Image (cartoon, one colour):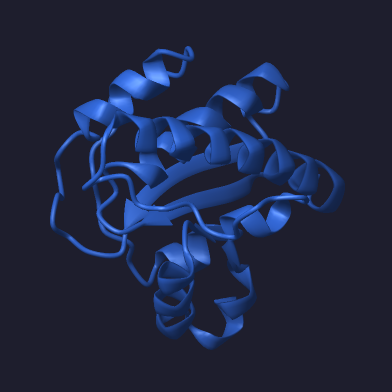
Length: 158
């Protein structure tokens, strides 16, 4: 059985591709590449076909995460049937995805940081209009959320 994970943010150029890259690295290190498939998408189609934001790429690379070959895409209704977990970066994405989800897939939509305990926040903020420190903060949150999500998948799905 393969568990499908789709990370979703606004335009699929900052948070969700960062989460995809970090989570892919953790899954690889855990030896679970065949058991977990990972993608990312955006709520909106502002940047379809574009690579991730340069600042996100540079911040991820500074910690050894590679965002090679990624390009922005929009989330589609079919994704709710293709993925076991649809992971929203913030509460506005969560609301949008739950409204979009066909009835039998509603429970697949989760807030990313809900998997992590002891967090000061429940959302991964959008760094797009901010400075490089915001991208560092986002990466910190994504690393913590990714570790917790992997533990959840290992205990509940595999």
